[in-house]
Image: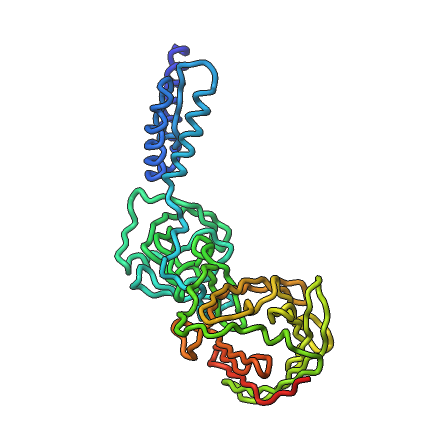
Length: 399
């Protein structure tokens, strides 16, 4: 009798353990990708048998042959097929995206909140979080755009502000726009609001850009690095313009007038020196309290210093126009800059054109007029944050 109860007890214990065994959370999308991949790879390994195990949430594989060659080959094939089927959670940058965008943001409780538009219709704000791998949206936002969360939506573990790690569902939205930048087919995690705004702007959106956060100016800059088309050339070429800088002499001087949103005034430019750097002739120019080092043959800017010699910025490669110029010439201005403390600044990338007309089409941020007689530029118009600044040559004296 004791032996019989022992057997029954063991059987009862087994039944209890089986009933309480925890099966792995079923990610239907992952299961479907894996089984589809196995069906493709199984054709090349007829001696293998496989099935999906709901308890472990994995593919179980057995083989009729000795050794592990087929098993490893099948596993590698399945891994590659699953990866090929896995959607990119970062989506894709819209083809209409500009080269860069300046986005005005709010700063609240030491957090930066960027304005967003979901699926082209619902507006909100997201906390800019460069440490978050995924963008997070509140369920109210998805409800507003009419997006239901599928029952088989995949999950991701999110760490909350209090340190807890919780599973959250992932859905795909058609588009997310920040400023003028739109990313399409973006995966977002769904989680309740935990602070101001409607969620987090994470790396799967931000990775499409070089991001500059300018907290003190309440803005962020999103730079795609895409080459923009140059301004449309409307004139015809009648001459080739040599670099006026090449004819400079130490002592040449120019006076410029300027006006802008903050007022107006004058400043002087004077050639201070003629020196060779890395085998290339350069001029040192004092321009309104800054010392500029320019290549003599191309007028490209090599570095900027204060009057007392402190480095402001060094450009690599030097930036400027590709002399000689003629109407119709196009070029890219592409350089990195570094300041006196060794810090790297935002990469400079512009696409330029030499054009005869004073009025250009497109978003022109700088226009410069050069003339042979004074051997320098005579007028420059620059768009700045709150308007435009115009500088014009007033007088000059040449050696």
